[in-house]
Image (cartoon, rainbow, N blue to C red):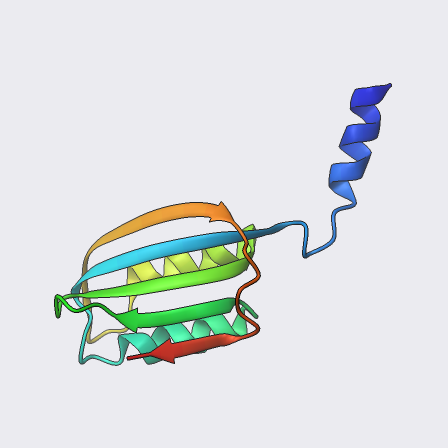
Length: 109
C-alpha cells in the first residue's frame, strides 16, 4: 500500500516540485555568432529561468537553466544544433535540482 501512495504522490507533483537544473558548457565557434540570442529566444519560449553567458576562453558559452526536465531536454537539443552560423564541437552537461535562483532568463556578458 505504501508504494502505491508514493506513486500517486509523484504523479501529482506540481511544476515547482518537478523542476530540474541544467548547466551546459557549449564549446566551438559559439561566440560572435548570435549564439546567446539563439539560446535566449528558445529558453524564453520554453519558459525556463536562468542565463546564458560567454566564457572568458573565447570559445565557450555557459548555459544555466531551470524548469521542467522535458523542457530542459528540448533546450539541450537546441544547444547541440545551435544557429547556422555556429559550429558546435562539444556540449558538457550537468543535471541537478532546481535552486529557484532566477525569476526569468537573461543574457550575461
